[in-house]
Length: 183
Image (cartoon, rainbow, N blue to C red):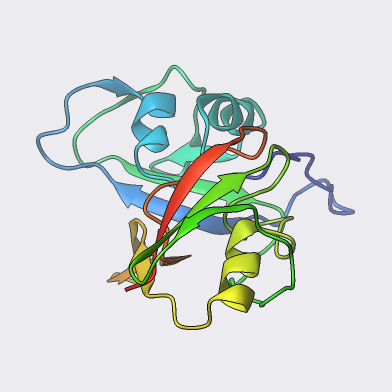
Protein backbone atom coordinates (compact mmCIF):
# COMPACT_ATOMS: atom_id res chain seq x y z
CA UNK A 1 0.00 0.00 0.00
CA UNK A 2 1.22 3.48 -0.67
CA UNK A 3 1.03 5.88 2.26
CA UNK A 4 -1.09 9.02 1.96
CA UNK A 5 1.32 11.04 4.12
CA UNK A 6 4.41 11.25 1.97
CA UNK A 7 6.42 13.93 3.74
CA UNK A 8 9.88 12.50 4.16
CA UNK A 9 12.08 13.60 7.07
CA UNK A 10 15.48 14.99 6.13
CA UNK A 11 18.63 13.49 7.62
CA UNK A 12 21.18 15.89 9.10
CA UNK A 13 23.47 15.67 6.08
CA UNK A 14 20.54 16.32 3.72
CA UNK A 15 20.26 12.71 2.55
CA UNK A 16 17.20 10.67 3.37
CA UNK A 17 17.38 7.07 4.41
CA UNK A 18 14.85 5.28 2.21
CA UNK A 19 13.44 1.79 2.65
CA UNK A 20 12.19 -0.35 -0.19
CA UNK A 21 8.51 -1.17 0.20
CA UNK A 22 7.75 -2.64 -3.23
CA UNK A 23 9.90 -4.06 -6.00
CA UNK A 24 8.42 -5.15 -9.32
CA UNK A 25 10.22 -6.19 -12.48
CA UNK A 26 8.33 -5.56 -15.74
CA UNK A 27 7.85 -8.62 -17.95
CA UNK A 28 9.84 -8.97 -21.15
CA UNK A 29 6.64 -8.42 -23.17
CA UNK A 30 5.58 -5.27 -21.26
CA UNK A 31 4.02 -2.73 -23.64
CA UNK A 32 4.84 0.92 -22.83
CA UNK A 33 2.50 1.97 -20.02
CA UNK A 34 2.51 4.95 -17.66
CA UNK A 35 4.05 3.94 -14.35
CA UNK A 36 1.06 5.20 -12.35
CA UNK A 37 -1.26 2.87 -14.28
CA UNK A 38 1.27 0.03 -14.11
CA UNK A 39 1.59 0.26 -10.30
CA UNK A 40 -2.17 0.57 -9.71
CA UNK A 41 -2.50 -3.03 -10.91
CA UNK A 42 0.34 -4.30 -8.74
CA UNK A 43 0.02 -2.58 -5.38
CA UNK A 44 -2.93 -3.46 -3.16
CA UNK A 45 -5.11 -0.47 -2.18
CA UNK A 46 -3.07 1.98 -4.28
CA UNK A 47 -4.90 4.78 -6.03
CA UNK A 48 -3.57 6.64 -9.04
CA UNK A 49 -3.50 9.85 -6.99
CA UNK A 50 -1.36 8.26 -4.26
CA UNK A 51 1.02 6.81 -6.85
CA UNK A 52 1.31 10.16 -8.64
CA UNK A 53 2.03 11.89 -5.31
CA UNK A 54 4.71 9.29 -4.50
CA UNK A 55 6.32 9.88 -7.91
CA UNK A 56 6.17 13.66 -7.43
CA UNK A 57 7.95 13.22 -4.08
CA UNK A 58 10.69 11.13 -5.72
CA UNK A 59 9.58 7.88 -4.08
CA UNK A 60 9.23 5.80 -7.26
CA UNK A 61 12.45 4.64 -8.87
CA UNK A 62 13.01 2.81 -12.13
CA UNK A 63 16.39 1.12 -12.45
CA UNK A 64 17.53 3.06 -9.34
CA UNK A 65 16.55 6.49 -10.71
CA UNK A 66 13.53 8.56 -9.54
CA UNK A 67 10.82 8.98 -12.18
CA UNK A 68 7.65 11.04 -12.60
CA UNK A 69 4.20 9.48 -12.93
CA UNK A 70 4.20 9.85 -16.73
CA UNK A 71 7.27 7.60 -17.13
CA UNK A 72 6.49 4.74 -19.55
CA UNK A 73 7.38 1.33 -18.12
CA UNK A 74 9.44 -0.77 -20.52
CA UNK A 75 10.32 -4.48 -20.58
CA UNK A 76 12.68 -5.57 -17.77
CA UNK A 77 12.40 -2.24 -15.89
CA UNK A 78 12.98 -2.73 -12.15
CA UNK A 79 10.51 -0.50 -10.31
CA UNK A 80 10.88 0.22 -6.60
CA UNK A 81 8.67 2.26 -4.30
CA UNK A 82 10.64 3.69 -1.38
CA UNK A 83 9.65 5.61 1.75
CA UNK A 84 11.42 7.06 4.78
CA UNK A 85 9.73 4.59 7.14
CA UNK A 86 10.73 0.91 7.12
CA UNK A 87 8.17 -1.65 5.98
CA UNK A 88 6.24 -3.19 8.85
CA UNK A 89 4.95 -6.71 9.02
CA UNK A 90 1.18 -6.55 9.29
CA UNK A 91 -0.31 -8.68 12.00
CA UNK A 92 -4.01 -9.19 12.41
CA UNK A 93 -5.05 -7.82 15.80
CA UNK A 94 -8.60 -8.87 16.78
CA UNK A 95 -10.68 -5.89 17.94
CA UNK A 96 -14.23 -5.72 19.22
CA UNK A 97 -15.55 -3.29 16.60
CA UNK A 98 -19.30 -3.43 15.89
CA UNK A 99 -20.24 -4.78 12.47
CA UNK A 100 -23.44 -4.03 10.57
CA UNK A 101 -24.28 -7.59 9.48
CA UNK A 102 -26.97 -7.63 6.79
CA UNK A 103 -26.99 -11.41 6.25
CA UNK A 104 -25.19 -14.44 7.65
CA UNK A 105 -25.38 -18.16 7.05
CA UNK A 106 -22.96 -21.10 7.39
CA UNK A 107 -20.95 -20.05 4.33
CA UNK A 108 -20.87 -16.27 4.19
CA UNK A 109 -21.45 -12.95 5.89
CA UNK A 110 -22.71 -9.82 4.18
CA UNK A 111 -21.64 -6.62 5.91
CA UNK A 112 -22.67 -3.02 5.35
CA UNK A 113 -19.30 -1.18 5.55
CA UNK A 114 -19.60 2.36 6.82
CA UNK A 115 -17.66 5.24 5.22
CA UNK A 116 -14.44 6.12 7.00
CA UNK A 117 -13.55 2.53 7.90
CA UNK A 118 -10.37 1.15 6.38
CA UNK A 119 -10.78 -2.42 5.12
CA UNK A 120 -7.22 -3.82 5.45
CA UNK A 121 -4.52 -2.96 7.97
CA UNK A 122 -1.62 -1.07 6.42
CA UNK A 123 0.85 1.73 7.09
CA UNK A 124 -0.83 4.19 9.45
CA UNK A 125 -3.89 1.94 9.87
CA UNK A 126 -2.88 -1.10 11.90
CA UNK A 127 -5.98 -1.05 14.08
CA UNK A 128 -9.63 -0.16 13.71
CA UNK A 129 -10.06 -1.82 10.31
CA UNK A 130 -12.79 -4.09 9.04
CA UNK A 131 -10.28 -6.96 9.03
CA UNK A 132 -9.52 -6.35 12.74
CA UNK A 133 -13.26 -6.57 13.47
CA UNK A 134 -13.70 -9.71 11.35
CA UNK A 135 -10.91 -11.65 13.05
CA UNK A 136 -12.42 -10.75 16.45
CA UNK A 137 -16.02 -11.72 15.63
CA UNK A 138 -15.25 -14.73 13.40
CA UNK A 139 -12.08 -16.50 14.58
CA UNK A 140 -12.26 -19.26 11.95
CA UNK A 141 -12.29 -17.17 8.76
CA UNK A 142 -10.11 -18.49 5.94
CA UNK A 143 -6.95 -16.41 5.48
CA UNK A 144 -6.00 -15.86 1.88
CA UNK A 145 -2.79 -14.17 0.85
CA UNK A 146 -2.44 -11.90 -2.15
CA UNK A 147 0.34 -9.64 -3.21
CA UNK A 148 3.11 -8.82 -5.62
CA UNK A 149 6.28 -10.81 -6.06
CA UNK A 150 9.25 -9.03 -4.58
CA UNK A 151 12.89 -9.53 -5.40
CA UNK A 152 15.30 -9.13 -2.48
CA UNK A 153 18.95 -10.15 -2.59
CA UNK A 154 18.35 -11.99 -5.90
CA UNK A 155 15.57 -14.10 -4.33
CA UNK A 156 11.93 -13.69 -5.29
CA UNK A 157 9.52 -13.60 -2.37
CA UNK A 158 5.82 -12.95 -2.13
CA UNK A 159 4.68 -9.86 -0.24
CA UNK A 160 1.54 -11.20 1.32
CA UNK A 161 -1.54 -9.18 2.15
CA UNK A 162 -3.76 -11.05 4.57
CA UNK A 163 -7.41 -11.04 3.58
CA UNK A 164 -9.45 -13.11 6.05
CA UNK A 165 -12.58 -14.14 4.21
CA UNK A 166 -12.77 -11.01 2.08
CA UNK A 167 -14.04 -11.47 -1.43
CA UNK A 168 -13.40 -7.83 -2.43
CA UNK A 169 -12.59 -4.44 -0.90
CA UNK A 170 -13.97 -0.91 -0.75
CA UNK A 171 -12.02 2.29 -0.32
CA UNK A 172 -11.94 3.92 3.11
CA UNK A 173 -14.50 6.65 2.39
CA UNK A 174 -16.83 4.39 0.41
CA UNK A 175 -19.79 2.71 2.05
CA UNK A 176 -21.40 -0.42 0.72
CA UNK A 177 -22.12 -4.09 0.99
CA UNK A 178 -19.16 -6.46 1.36
CA UNK A 179 -19.13 -10.24 1.10
CA UNK A 180 -17.04 -12.30 3.52
CA UNK A 181 -16.50 -16.04 3.05
CA UNK A 182 -16.70 -18.13 6.22
CA UNK A 183 -15.28 -21.27 4.56
